[in-house]
Length: 129
Length: 121
Length: 247
Image 1 (spheres, rainbow over the protein chains, first blue to last red):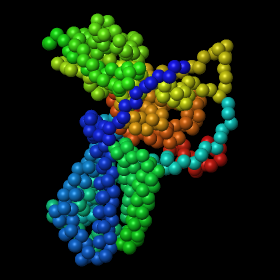
Image 2 (image 1 turned 30 degrees about the horizontal axis):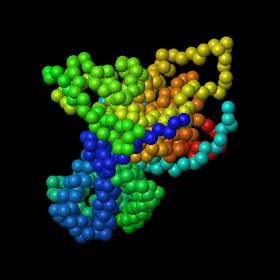
Image 3 (image 1 turned 135 degrees about the vertical axis):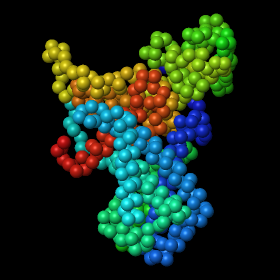
Image 4 (image 1 turned 90 degrees about the horizontal axis):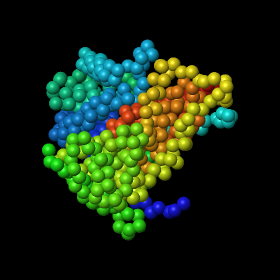
């Protein structure tokens, strides 16, 4: 066989900025950092609640300081991106069947939002009753 | 027809299942918790629950188990995703080290979750 | 409508010393002309040295895939008028080594494809005399979508994971594994799982979803890969719960 001198093209570190779909993908993956941040945040809350009323009040006051609020707002936006993309991809990732028939993608997506609403209402009731 | 070989036990499927579980928890449970405790209560949109009530909710064994399970899968979810973001986005070559650091952080976080939750109950 | 459009075509001559360069050609802009028609015009009328692959001109042979303005496309199904007033960048499919001009080296895929055993595997060996394997329309529907793959490699060109990790077995190969797994006549799911459960099998995929978006045949490799992960995970949990041959 003749040796062919092929050319390999290097991939730029910035490949994900070249196409909107790639960019959204990388942003979606970066939401993981903010999910981890919320785990830390909620653990700090639980810790404060466990330490007593004063610690709990201090935690809420700290959470209202500007840089924490800014961080949480940015993190919330990434969380929204996670929710939307996760729900949208579910019908593709799972073969949901109702009585042997493939469930329409819109139904799968919609039922997830219903689940989100039910869970949110329950947590709101549990925490504020 | 070859004889059936015993299949090797693999860690990837387990990690992937936890990643997926964490993705579902992050999409379904996290938004309301974040909305309430990171925005609505600190900023006074909704008056925060009093301490005794919250302590009673957090201290309940069901809440303990649920929160612990949720925190663990959320941490694995984050670690797994961030690991691949580092591979793809930054084209990091030291893959084994990245994996050890990411999952290691998730394990440390999980232990911290046990300690913190235990202390609060 | 202007009467011509400019093509910015990647040229690469392996016998030369330099890497790929861009050469510009002006071709007639006609309503019914595709990018491939433009390239054939160049080849026939302007520059006979331009190298590119094509065959059927009707979206079924899968040989005319190229990156058009950065998007992997079948050039026979991509109209020049959609890019007017131009210019249009025509590059070899991304993620593959370039052999010459717009021709890429597909050796890597040719080596990977047979690994997933994309053919019907049976426990028994029936001969033609024993009769055919019957299949109902529902059983056909189960895998039909995945059988539409024409191996055009657009999904590999769109997949950043494949670009960054050439070990990854890739979208079309996994979709084809799924095609035979879902076939009621096939008994090879276990053998394919042994291949795809490896690290370079399904686990490298991060569900970017671009493979499905660029697929000219609507095969949905991204969906196939995620479903394969679920299948592999289930199998693994079963193996854990029922360690000895209970399956």
